[in-house]
Image (cartoon, rainbow, N blue to C red; front, side, top):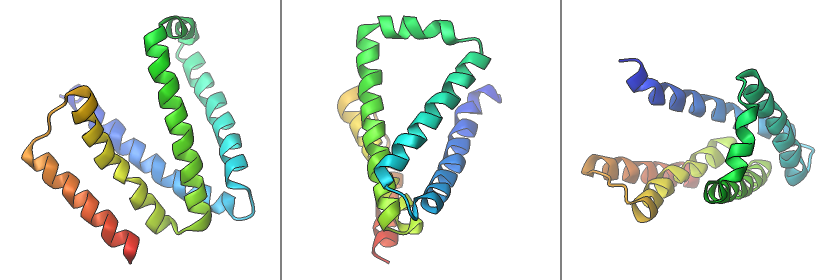
Length: 145
C-alpha cells in the first residue's frame, strides 16, 4: 500500500524542498548576481548529487547512462531546460517577490501536463483539466495582486 503512494510522498517532499529553494535563494540573492549565484548553486547541487549516488553505490551506472545516446540526448536536453529554468527563476527572484514568483513558476505544472499530452500521448481526464484550469486561475490571481 505504501509503495503505491511513494510518488505522492516524494512529490510532496519535492514541493516542500522547492519552497525552501525560493526562500534561501531570495535571501542569498540580495547582493549577488543572479546568474553567477545560479552557477554556484548548480555546482553545489552536482557535488551533493554525486555524493548521494556514491553513497548508494551507483557511480558505476553513470557510464551506462552516457553510453545510451538517445537517453543521454534527452537527459542533456532536460539538463539544459532545467538550467535555463533556474537562470530565469533566480532572475525573477532577484527582481520580484517570492510570493509572486513561486506561484507563477508553478505554471510549469500546467505546461508539463499539456506537453505530456502533446509529446508523450498521455491522456488527462476532466478533473485533471479542471485542476489545471484552477492552477492557472490561481496563478493569475496571485501574480496580479
